[in-house]
Amino acid sequence: MFFFSKNHINDAVEEWRHMADAVLIDVREADEFRAGHIPSAINVPLSEMDFVSIPKDKQVFVYCLRGTRSSRAAGKMKKMGYTKVKSIGGIVGYDITIHWRMTAEQFLGKKTEASA
Image (cartoon, rainbow, N blue to C red; front, side, top):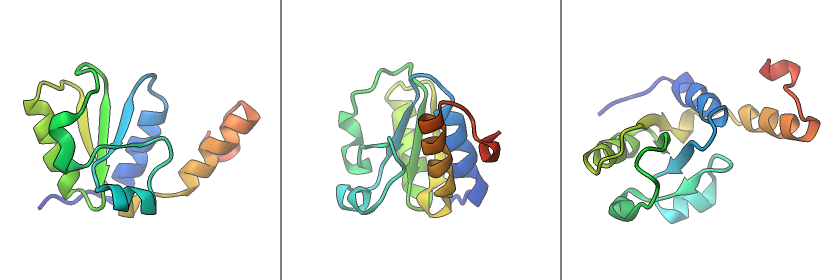
């Protein structure tokens, strides 16, 4: 089993939000996604990964609960021909304050002191 540091997912979410056209995928099952997810993530459960319809040249960030399913999903996507896919670990390490900084930036139209 592969474990990520708690900062790994947070650093990757920051990277994702600054990349135009990058995609953030939550590979947990639909009920887990409904219970809580990173804002703007799309849900493509690992069990349905064969049916993903994202252009294969887009930057893709993949997460799950703890990192195991995201690693499997990233490997599967690479075998399917995706060239820019990154497993970023699990939502258990996600820092919700990142979302609040993103919201403040959108509202204010600029970076906040906390995100600078």
